[in-house]
Image 1 (tube, helix red, strand yellow):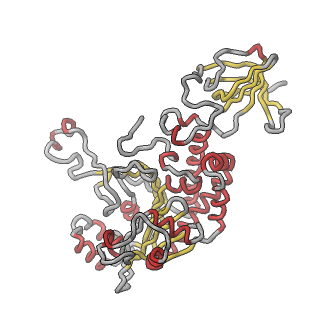
Image 2: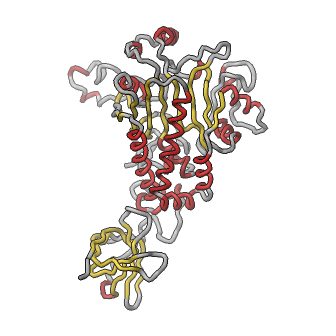
Image 3: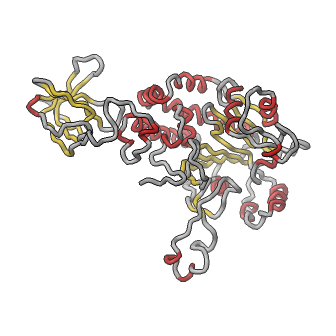
Length: 449
């Protein structure tokens, strides 16, 4: 008795011979299409590239070495005809990611973008599994917030149209206070850290940066974690490194075909570089050491960490912020392997970063993870738990009233970090433009669909 199986999918190619039809059909669940062999009597002029079909047949061993099985069709139904002449992607052409990006409503039908999205899906699952396996509690932090995580980025303000606010809100804000789309869930995680040993969140964040560069999005995803009873940056760095390596190894195991295809399509040779990252122990540089490396470099930078960027008197002055080009050079200097930069100047970091008390070079216990091709991937710190030092810093910044609730948390030693999800995907896949690793890119002057 022949067991008939249904196949629903989209025609990738069709070849008509004298006695047989040969179709390649893909349903999006994996990269490879299934070959369908049918009698030429089943030919339908609507069987073209992009057609939606439902085929019933038996799965048989294929005589060809490149495919283990094929479907011997008993019945072919064309659900919807494709229109290959007007379709912007041609089956035998290799289209660049830049070209594909012009068609946000259709690019998911290309092999490369469907591979990118399957990898993104697997990465999402792997991140959740990592935190679950390590005892973290997931927290759904709010998208709408009244805090700005102390300068984490320019924010989108949230207000309904004036005519729809209602009588009570006509003269004020809908929420009785300014409200914004979140740039970070960190402060909400710190609230929850008062009840759980380890918490994390994974969700959208928003920044109103007027930039169309390959590194910026107005809407993106952040992975953020907060841990109680951590007393050193090494504790945080260990979780960062374990997260990166565990998730990446899981993706390479579960999505090997898609990853290989992406590397070949986008960045040949990147798989070897990625495997090298996984084998190496991440190195550590202090901020002070990083400035010395830049000072001794023969490379010409577009932006020097000098007086104009740090209000000091001479070039490569300690206390200046690092730009992406500096971060990438530090990675190169470290053997093209991920590198932690730790102990940043006090004035460069927010109020919640723990004071190291190391005069005269006043630093805080903060850390950034820099990776090849991207620069900063993760940023974190020990949090300031000493109430007097915290109160003093908020007083100096004129923020005590706004963050009185933070003073009331009364947490013990704790710390955490955030990782940009799209930056992570760029790093492991070698994708140059961040707009190519998110389903629907949002950036200044562009909100299609």
